[in-house]
Length: 229
Image (tube, rainbow, N blue to C red; front, side):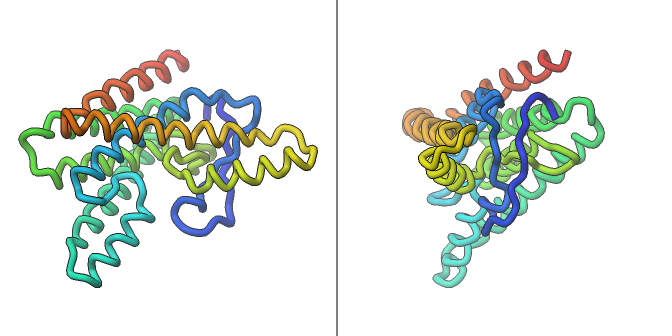
């Protein structure tokens, strides 16, 4: 783990809250927020392309898939993206074990590669293949921050971030210091901004808007590599 001091918080319910984050007031927030914005950008583009399915929000896909299965909808999309997401987590984790000195860079390198493949295939490959590549990328991005080989911070777990923000705000009103509640709002705000940007740009460019996400992920990869140099 780098200078990020991010801890896994147990006891949550559902896919998002179970890996919620705990951010110290000493932790740099720029890299996590940037990754959350990239995830929001990608998820919004995929949501539009898939007609209401996500590539980073597996709780939502599980519910949507169950509803579609009960009503005769395209529930197979949920199966595909969930499987690809899990595959991305597995691949990212394996790379981190192979490159233990650079866990963040290993995960981001895989993210960039998957986003590159999705961007290249955006105008020639089937949309479901592109969606699978994006879901795998979002799975990999969620293992970027690890401690003792366990995820300490998933950049798309915004339910957990909002819970922590609300709890921290109450603690601050109670006179507690160092709750860092506003930092959780920064993370949530980042994914909102990313999703807004991705949705707006994709209305004009379609899946070609993924190139911007690839550029951002590549820049973040370079930053992590330089920081470890």
